[in-house]
Length: 95
Image 1 (cartoon, rainbow, N blue to C red):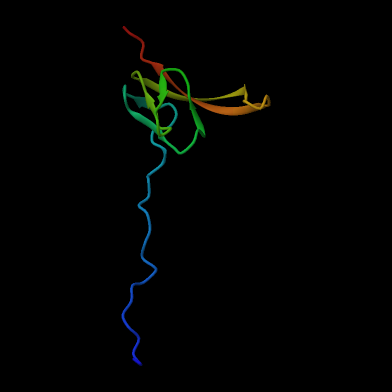
Image 2: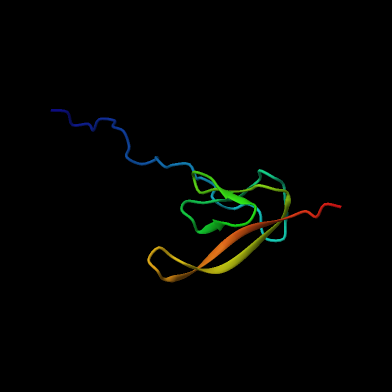
């Protein structure tokens, strides 16, 4: 029977890469069409005017303009009123 411990693999040193989620553009900042505004898991922020929610819940801009956050009371699927944060893009005025 061996009296020396064999070199085995360690159970540490494994971790996933961070996904860099969060708000990428803040309120009153200028955005271009197709720009990523928020990367998220689930719908903490909801798509409003001139924005779109993609398959992985990322919110992108559909037009160029200025970003605006707004809160609104909405009826949830349970019938209760909930306060939701919407992301809107106010388009540039054509001159």
